[in-house]
Figure (cartoon, rainbow, N blue to C red):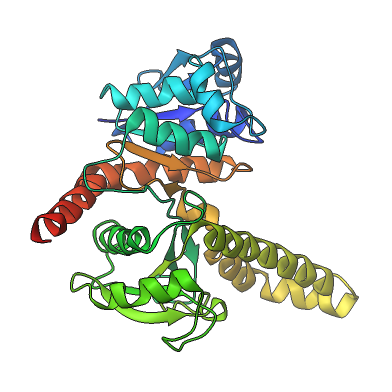
Length: 338
């Protein structure tokens, strides 16, 4: 039985999305126990709306909530009884196997490194979401997308190695293709960070480095692991989401513009629905904070119950494959060789 802690107070749709997602997860998988952390009376009021196996869902009270507007470091230090701090302490003590939250990204990053801690050999812990692409698998890994702004070349090298381990052991992609985000395909292009990192990645014999990737090639699935520092990664992720929403809005508007297009919409609805589903990032779960001593997964702040459920279930693979342990072993081995 795998125990997953869910921050019931984090996110725009808390606690309804978190509670519903937890119930959907335990109804789908009988090998999960979910611990909902937050204001007990609020959580139990939400739980009362559903039928579920009480043996698979429990509540741990936390009287405080860290808001997204709060300075992360101060919030983690001062709000010891917040849902994020209480939840991460359960991971640190070994009382649970994973922590899922849609709350403050900054607080999760600080808490992950200060409370849970990094595994030996890891310099920085990156956020690594899966993004939809046209590749055979239907997704690529973007690493880092928000944890380490102003990263150094050695950090990006570690991100590449972590991403390769993740894609191979969790997603089943053999010999994953690794590329670094650049403003051109030529090796001599890029800013100072990319130019310094490129030759280091070429020298890595434990990853399948294929060179640079331009932003326009990301949706095609040209690479399985897309490496960048957090500022660039976050811009890519947000642009990705914004373009998808804009295109969807325009398609819907066009299909409803006349009687003829409405009839056409009815005819293509099943195929269109299936296509759009493949580009829905919520079906891919949350973004793990790789390289920690415990499992921490970040969901979108606007997560629905679907993404929360998938993130909880996603933790099963993380636990079974011991992803962070593999990351630590890989980086430790490299350190010993050097």
